[in-house]
Length: 252
Image (tube, rainbow, N blue to C red; front, side):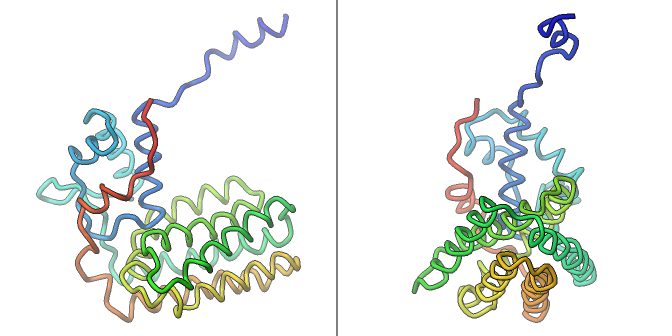
């Protein structure tokens, strides 16, 4: 059998559908904290913002509901779930263990390219935090970029995928920390923990890397619980998020 004949037995490569692309965009919004707990989603507004029909949006929303990243309220409105304190404590405890482990592995497995990406993400977040009037949505997104640069450096795709699922639920709540409390960007400890994690990974110190990431997650979690943000209303409005939150991508 020739190489060409062998390839024909595999079948055509599956192309991303519009639903897949919309799902990816909405997943990124949730993970990057662009939507807050309790935020309602208008399927029509989402379709208009992305320049697509309602069908791929419905498909993407159905998948995110199955992921438990979105929920359908009794009045049929689609919204970001509001976690109870107990649910949030559980999520934070799981994140500390799993993301701490990923950071520990990153310290042992990071390549020079990984270190460059982590350092760039750390510098971007630190630079923004020093600005007198930082862009709050950008701060939440840059925080996510740093964490995922660390987790990617673990070299464990399955672990990376698991963490992505956790951030579908955690991202909106992180919104309540950095985006709702501008002073937290400079004073909340994230800048220090990020720097500590970077230094530890550079030094190959897995225990210190785990400790830095765990400290970052724990500090933010304790603050969110203390300020009562989990029982509050959603931050911002859908119109503002739709205007500035979606990445500028053409939908093929």
